[in-house]
Length: 124
Image (cartoon, rainbow, N blue to C red; front, side):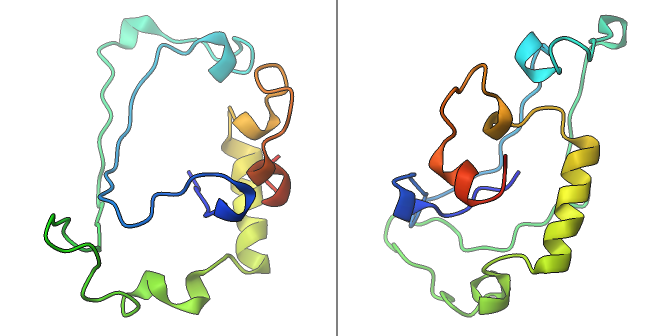
């Protein structure tokens, strides 16, 4: 999932606050399964999700400290990581085209008006 900073469009962005990684499993309702084309095989329950080889590189959240001592020094703070280059965008598009089942940016039934970040960021 990509969540770009679109504050300039009025979309909230989580600056200077603790963050976490969260995932969930849902019951494959119609909206998330290409109109019900992807069926859930309930005989395979219980369903389990896990992370493998996952590494977080960041600052520990602290009430006493509102900024990270390494601000600007980490790999993700460097200019090269502000956005994807052309080849990276093409690779991302290939993966999205091949594997994405649901994208709220292209769901006109639930969201008749395209959100500003979808229109600007080529996510529709």
